[in-house]
Figure 1: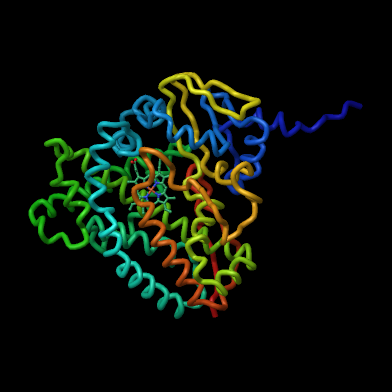
Figure 2 (figure 1 turned 45 degrees about the vertical axis):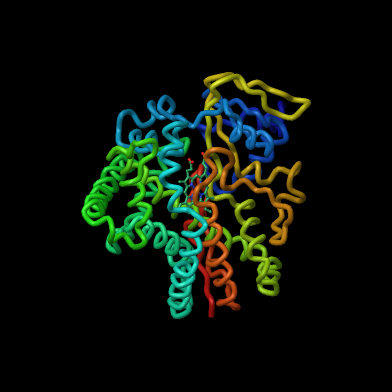
Length: 414
Ligand code: HEM
């Protein structure tokens, strides 16, 4: 009788295909990242794209000037000429300079240290209100009742989105960012195209109002600088304006919501670390860095090589040829044992912690200070307010590959 031999780790790593990832990978991608990092760190997928998992390589891909973020060619087969194509190829994150630099400069006015200081008390106020409500509820879902609520309020305030539209933002964001996943069903693509149209119409309305009353902006200052600001004598076109606002709304709430929910979920999974944080609330800053490292809200980024670039460890160098599409696996880089001691363990006091959850280089996250402030306040105050925090059912991740966030985290606090 012929016995079938199970594939070795090396063979499994070589067989990885980004286009056929399964539920097991979506639930827990970290064992696969480890296999790839150890056995095939510059992995060539059957579709000709590359998957990088070492810290050094992912950092290089983010920093190397030969790496492009322009997705006009790569998004065509998936999105055709539809609204998702227009959206993703107009947002600053998927563009190179000079367009990227022009939009980034206009946006940066909303993220100065002074603006961040002004937001501090606003964030505290929202968090305290949310916590009062949760205390009354006693049993709730951390994701929907808490994690999503704070960043949605903040970014909607920054863009001046009225109350009645805010509940729709998460739905739009899930569809628009979800369309970036390696595998997307035709139904989801259709819904994604529709979300861009609906969201765009809503923003056009807001922009028209703001044009009429630029001085009544209050918190919606970022909208004002995007509408009226100029770089080298040029304003954003109406399409550039709308699509970058959509991007900002999505980028500003989805990832931060994941940081807050993933952080609280991680503390519940590692009760010794929860206890440690309760006893040392000053650890909140290093704790948030650790949550960003351990469950990075953006797991897989991407770049395109415009020249041949060499990656891989010294004894296994590989040249990625010009024109190749590269998946930069931040989630794997953030657990690379070459950089992080005991990377699969959570240590809320970890120092140094050079995690790269916000990316690196020209496209480094514009909201990294804001995301951190939200994380410190939301997680720190939550832990302090609820000394009897306990899980109240099974947690569940939302099951997308590029972004990692909980979809459900039921708890009781009484
Ligand atoms: C924990 C929260 C967050 C995480 C983990 C995160 C992660 C990232 C990452 C990895 C990138 C770089 C993508 C690339 O290089 O391809 C990025 C870009 C960006 N993020 Fe964030 N983000 C967070 C919060 C925010 C917030 C709160 C805002 C705004 C309110 C924001 C706005 C942006 C913008 C505008 C960019 C594009 C920058 C550019 O292309 O130059 N992000 N983010």
